[in-house]
Image (tube, rainbow, N blue to C red):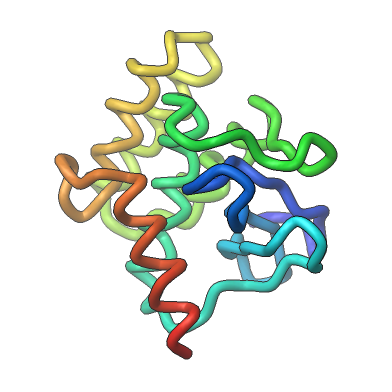
Length: 147
């Protein structure tokens, strides 16, 4: 379980100078957040628990693949921040197979495997392991704007 409150961490932007996306630890678990550069972060809304989890996994994947435009430097997630997020996902995993896949992803991070190897293990945590993590995040941003 994450700490009661934590600072916001950003992983990147879908487009240059656009909204950044990231995560924050809350008392109830990790949540996706986004904001314009000059605005405070706000939690993305309108998602089921499975969609929220997929978004958090996608955040970790794009971090390791460097798939997005850089986030604001003062908010940029570190390797340790992402490792903590994945550990939180691993500890909250309900299904035995999801729990094992999460442990493998944590081991890959701890072992310092290359980003693409870590991303491959993280993809096993998605409902569809072949899904594009950038598309997942774009969908969550779009859905949150509608709510």
